[in-house]
Length: 320
Image (cartoon, rainbow, N blue to C red; front, side, top):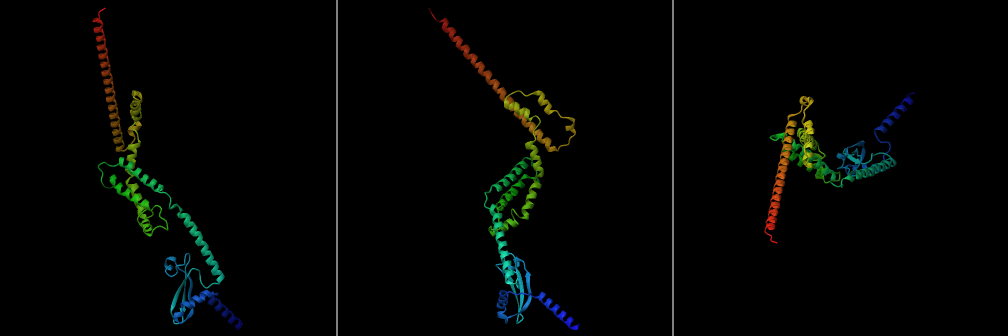
């Protein structure tokens, strides 16, 4: 019984030792360990093996590492500890390491294909940038009509000039890809289109222009009630329909008690003044046209009277 117990303990120790160290060490790994410890009296034993390392911290020791990076620490006979880096996990059979390497190469090819398809849009024409900057310019133009005339600071439309300049410049990095120039990538990441600063500027642009945009929209696209009637009559040269104009200018009780901002009534008053000026100009033109026709009629009558008088004199002076 004691003999069986001793055999069991030995088997357990063997299993634990096989777990702590690799069961199968490839010939290539053994050669690498021996070569690394050659200056230090030869290879002694393994301290750690197969620990994953981030690629960023591994590139200077393992340039060929493209997807994974493993480090193994070995001890040499003089006590020197050496770190060895590898693309595949070490101390496994050659067949497993070859299969893992094949999988890594396949993954690399797939990643390159996906990358090439992902950056295929990079050389496209700059039409998307033109559309975006045109969108910003349209918003700024509408906001300009709704600006506070005597405003300063954030309420002044003048702040849109540097904002639009930055947005236009940031669109230069719109098509930045992983194979772009490092300086362009850095500017794009920290200053321009794909940076957090660009998001802050974009949000600030819409926040600053929110109220001017609403006021400008009201100024440009909300018509005066009598605009269509007056414009159609002036353009067609016809009389203004009085009843239609009266209905358009009539204010219902609901409109009286409906709240609207002060600038809406200011815009309507300004549009009414422009309509009146248009009517005044049209009236002056009509009066000038009438005066011209009268003058032409009077001149025609004078010429005809003069011609008849001349004929009368000639007739009287004839002898038969």
